[in-house]
Image (cartoon, rainbow over all chains, first blue to last red; front, top):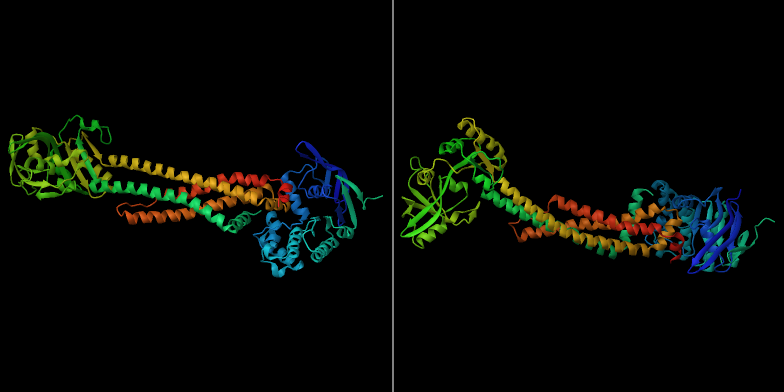
Length: 228
Length: 402
């Protein structure tokens, strides 16, 4: 059974009088430890898809099974709990909490999940070392470079050891060199078994993925991983 | 999320915006300081009045003839029927009781006072030598009624300051003879001005020995017996002893009534207590204003930190987590302001005491607690709406607003 199963997903937004179909009839199955790039022009529904996958948004119709569990009937708190344990987010604009240090930002998901301080400290230390941030632990985000910020964000996204990492233009705010470093970092995580789903405009990044899902007008235009 | 982590998270948010936090603390602390200081002022005034009453002799026990169920001073206390007289011997018997410092019998009547063709109708008080000390009066000239053995009932009189001025003008009065009713008295002294005490114009009275007054007014019962006990705390115990002695002397019948000044004092105490409470209430309005300020500050914080709220949701924060975090922030702000306010209020009360040393302006404990409590409740109450708004933000929208 696939880790992620989307069936007949519909998502509509009402903008004034007109109804916008952000997603129409989307069927996607993603196995564990896949590396998927979602590409397409602006407004094609990539971000909406990512939000749905991350349980931040709900479809108007269709079903979404994550890890074998139907998520359409989850309460907000159940969804939050599921996000906490299964999903990591990496954003284009990093989304670090400005008043917290790198270490505190990394610890945040564990704080929210109510994990013991001792365990938190151990895992943060491990993450800081793993992502080459050991000497930046007590710096605030504005004292860090873009690459360092995104590494802190990735460390934060993976510290709860989620099965799925959802990345929204993870290299969009970085220069080429740093962007490549971040890409390698994400691919290393994928190599260790994390399912990596990346929304990107960057063709070179999309090409590196083992599977490309091209979207247009809220529908899947092509899917390189589609069996048959 | 663990409670301690929520608190720490909120504390980081409080300290991250020093200017906002300082202004908020200031607004809240002014409200709390106002409550603390104004109650200190009100309670100081109450204490002041109570102390004045004590100086006047709140450890006074008053016995009047006749059984009356009425407590305190009201018209009924003056019209009690008199089955058995209160005598000077009764008063003398009380003097030997433990804890009793002074006993004065009292006979009251009105009579003509005449000197040198001037005539006054005035209140005459028959009593003894101890009355002067018992009522904390002071002499202006001469001596009060005699207390040497055998001289107690001499035909002497002491005048209130105003009566003296009306009869003698600027001429000396001590040693002169004057007429009260149909008897002649030698003036031995003049009281210093005292003003009103217990509803009687002391300055317009003349004082003569109690036996003289019996003769003058052709009566045989005392109007009152005043008993001063050593301390206020012993009032009840002494009252019991007085009751026992008088009852024994009156053939086991309790045909007299005891009252204390506590009844009057209690009324003053209540009135000034109510004023203090009212003033505290007015000051509490500024706390409500500070509360609205807390709400505004927190609503701004929610707007400012919308992306952060979106992020927290993406990281798995439940709505409850977010609500509690923002509520904790509001409570920290108001409680911090409360603590600073209590400190400021104590400082203000101290300044008051320096400026008006007669006023014991100490904020009562309940006011300090109420100030802090109101700050806390205000924080929770006015922090609730912003916290709920934060928790209900749509995660996708919140993340997108950058």
